[in-house]
Image: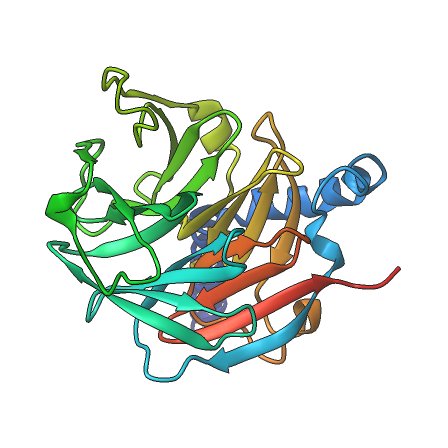
Length: 305
């Protein structure tokens, strides 16, 4: 009787420990909020489907293409003038131009950077590159002859906002109409900052930078990190990519999550999960492009109605 009672007690205790661990994990991975959003997303479809990107309608058409001779690709931006993509590598530090089907078009060496982590198109030939560890933003300019870029030659600012080692500025997005640069702090905590005044578009104007954030919006982001941002000009919506949550979220103009794209195997036609999503952007037609470390390339397009 005593041994049976002891065994039951141990099993009950073990069950309690398991439940507690599951509860802690659910809180850590924001599973409660994510499950509630899944319910909300069903209701969002009727209102948002025709006036947003509506990520549930996307299907993968290039699934994990290996980018030859590249390692540690990080970030992605679309250049509407060149009809091409740009990414950065933070091991050998290059700015790399890619075709829309994942071919390497050219490489530009980066000098004077410590940890280039994001790149964003601003205007014809003008980009901003973030140096994650130093929380530094550097404006660079390229043309057809550019083969090397030196950070010291570009307009730059450093922002000591919540410095936390290798959890600094991970994603960039630019609103060309509002002249707003969105900067994502990776985690601990997740933050999206809005910067006005950088890069300086008119050299005749005084250099004045204003930085703002929206804690209420950031609290609604049920992701563990942000690895990339993209601003969609057509809708005015922001896309936030999370590597650890294996998810992309579409945020409306009020910062509310309205649709999502899962990066798990079997979702959106993926044959296997996306291992380490680091960059996300879209082109003029709304096609989505994604890169994952070490060198994987994905394209998602909306399914035919």
